[in-house]
Length: 62
Image (cartoon, rainbow, N blue to C red; front, side):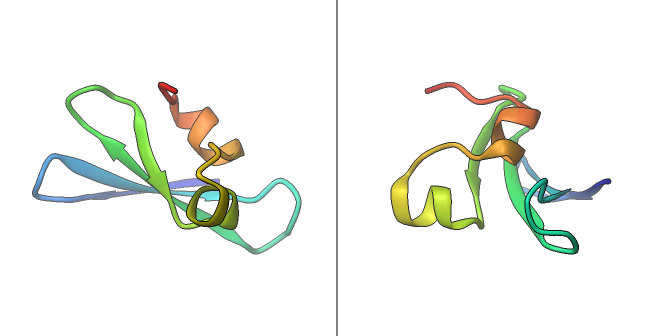
């Protein structure tokens, strides 16, 4: 399931359900100009700075 929230500053928050943990959602921040994910609320990104499943689903430039 994917849910979209439009942000006024050129970014969009996309909620993507975790593949591993049912009922847990990744809050992926997408840059509307590039169409690529720029950050996520998950531990992969916040602790290890590694793109997660949700970020790769949206699209990510490393």
